[in-house]
Image (cartoon, rainbow, N blue to C red; front, top):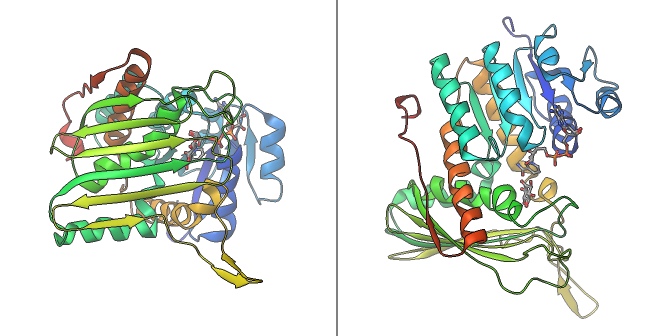
Length: 339
Ligand SMILES: NC(=O)C1=CN([C@@H]2O[C@H](COP(=O)(O)OP(=O)(O)OC[C@H]3O[C@@H](n4cnc5c(N)ncnc54)[C@H](O)[C@@H]3O)[C@@H](O)[C@H]2O)C=CC1
Ligand SMILES: O=C1[C@@H](O)[C@H](O)[C@@H](O)[C@H](O)[C@H]1O
């Protein structure tokens, strides 16, 4: 990138999130362009890239990163492919926005932390987009004023209309609750030390064998509790809500209805149906922040350490689900690079 030229981005993975982020880069935010794409499904990559001027199409992520005009990388392939993509980006010392999860397990996430440390500087922002959602930002700002006093409990509800066909019981934790793990660490500024998972009799709306819903309890090193109802086949809507209970007050997010209409003896509104709708503003601001900081030669937002910590907590959660009881989180020592 030179002077005022737009940041050239290689998008790795052109599925649902990758394509949505490409639309955002192309039409919503300024200062960036999609310079290359890579997807193992060449047809999909070609179709998504059609109409984007100068965008080259690849099946190998490393080739996309090496393409002309690429200054930065957006990783939106499935979680198990993230480690290889991140290491390939580090080889070229490129800045990365990596969709969550950083990687699906703690050992691979720690390898990424170590590889970034070997570079000697931060290169990665992890796609925990709730940190950019206007409601969550307001909640964090309120907590920081100290008006409500010390946080005691955080109650989270996370509901999806339906899970994708490949969803497993552990993915309710690694794919979905990973957001609440990050929100808990970020809002409270505390590490999560132990996880317990309870699962009621599964909903008849869940696919056979899927433990859905689940109730996850996170304990923090500051003595707070954060509980999460995760229900990925609720059938009626996409809901993400949180209530913080502090010593002198409470605050809630996620109850808002954009429009409440009254007609024909009834009142009511609509419920969002998926994350692209509910978190549209958050994704826009996340991308905007990443592009702006990257153009300034800086790195911000959720770090590789945050991605690793979330992976370690989720791994403990999966053990708690599978083995029962309370499982303590094992975290490596935090490197100085992450403050
Ligand atoms: N922040 C958020 O709220 C959300 C984040 N995500 C995350 O975004 C990522 C992508 O999820 P979706 O777009 O929903 O999945 P998807 O299945 O729609 O798309 C993934 C794409 O990656 C391609 N792919 C697979 N292996 C690859 C590889 N090794 N290299 C390059 N491309 C590869 C697939 O062919 C597919 O086109 C995941 O990490 C997921 O957890 C997904 C949904 C919401
Ligand atoms: O990240 C996401 C998905 O991968 C996950 O499967 C959903 O449960 C979350 O609500 C969504 O934000």
